[in-house]
Length: 114
Image (cartoon, rainbow, N blue to C red; front, side, top):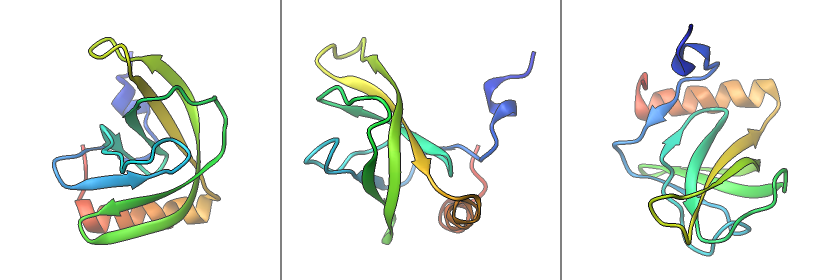
């Protein structure tokens, strides 16, 4: 059986570098994602978001800001390590050409990923 990594369409970056996400509808604070790809990211938040709720976000990689990105929560789970928080899978809502451009920017800033 193929591993989840083998099924990924876009490179997933397990982030050893400073990456932050600003998504005011999810949190007043800048968020630090667990991982990031051209399809989305995983993050821990204090309030449980509604699934499929569209949000605007900006992704900051080093000193580069990728802004005006639409996204939506596609799964939410209670954080077993801290039950007062939620682990959320966020999917970017991007046309395919914009997603390829975004992926190119991530590769430029972060390398080849994992």
